[in-house]
Every structure is written in structure tokens, then in C-alpha cells.
Length: 106
Image (cartoon, helix red, strand yellow):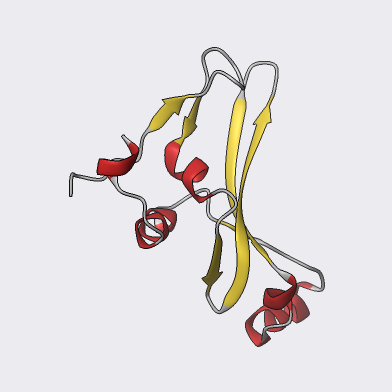
């Protein structure tokens, strides 16, 4: 397999000069159990006047919200929550685990 490089690709649907994170796009909508909590990845894109921001979140499903791991954190926070994976590289390992390959996606 080729070397994995976190890169961006052109996405004309959003903005002429905007590139989106390829791995965020790959993970969007996929289900995964993260830290014992079942949920779905959501790739959020916020387009402003002079800036575009991207976020990758793991949003717990109804099943995930019933898990002990989720309920323990909810008790501490006092509200529902999701996991922000935008910063860091944990999402790279998850994408590979879910089938991302530079050979298939470049």
C-alpha cells in the first residue's frame, strides 16, 4: 500500500477555492464504535465570508447513548455530547480500519 498522506481535494460544490479534507469526507456517515460508544461520523463544513472551517465529529446513536461509557460522561457534563475528532490524527487510523486506502482513493 502507498504512503498515507492527509491531504485535501478540490470540492467545487462549496467554494471555488476551497479544498476539503479527504479523510473527513470518507468517514462522513460511517458508523463506528468509538471508546465503547456506537455512533456515526459527521463532517461539518461552515462556509463564512472569508473562511471555511471543517469539523469531524462522532455523534452517538440511540444505542450509543444507552452505553455505560456515554452515560458516565453525560453525568459529568450534565448534557448530551459528541466527540470532536477534528484536531489530532486519531481519525487517520479509524479511516484505514474502515477501508480507506491511498490506492483506492487517490
